[in-house]
Length: 102
Image (cartoon, rainbow, N blue to C red; front, side, top):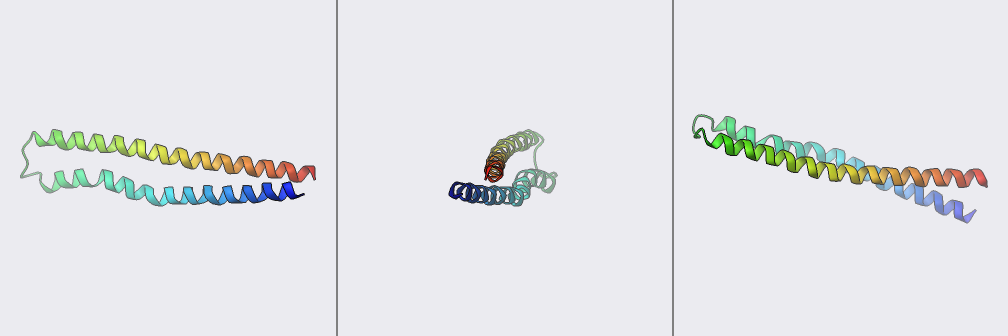
């Protein structure tokens, strides 16, 4: 019976951790996307009458580079959330199996 309680508390702790990571990911996503996809187009629109034509290539490269950086950064965080979710589900499944055996 003590083992079942330990499994349940582990499952609850992992669920709390997974939910906290997922919530932080969701809250931070719009900030990351805004930080990447807003500044470069805003500067181009703001300075479109004053910049040379060759600088559009620099702004385009910056836009593509920042987008690629965001994609890799977001993928890492998303993978971390998915791993925490899988661990929580496995712990909950193990706790459920232990309860049915008791």
